[in-house]
Length: 139
Ligand code: AMP
Ligand code: ZN
Image (cartoon, rainbow, N blue to C red; front, side, top):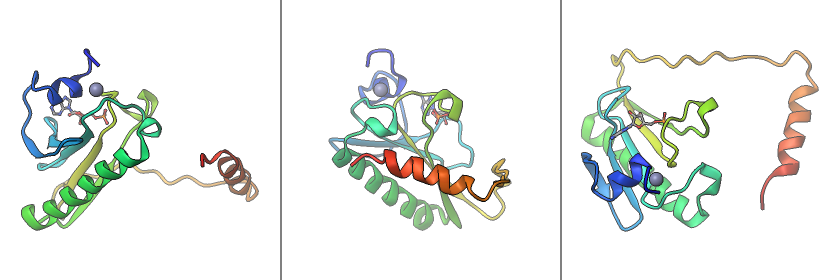
């Protein structure tokens, strides 16, 4: 995709700080880290959203996510790791080339997710929603 910023990074037209690269996957430092060490993992080929990524390629991307998370713990001495992935502007996605955020977490990093747990008022509602999801699961 000629106007995709992450495709331009893959092509070397925009610089990045590389963490890992193979024939299908690139990991590089996020320029706006939520926590220092924040790394992005992408397929080199342009795919978006997550549901459009071929399963075999997605497996390779997730394996790199796993390895980067392990390296943040072993190399940066992270106390924990968040893996975050957004699809669609309504979900907060800014760059429409599928990517996983791998964010090292430290006891004193000061970051807090704005995670407000809701609740179901009608106890039948989660079951009804689960059935709709179950019925639509791709094979
Ligand atoms: P998202 O909101 O999930 O689409 O996240 C996009 C991420 O890409 C943000 O965390 C940005 O800081 C990051 N980003 C945007 N441009 C660059 C770039 N040129 N190099 C590294 N990271 C970038
Ligand atoms: Zn792209």
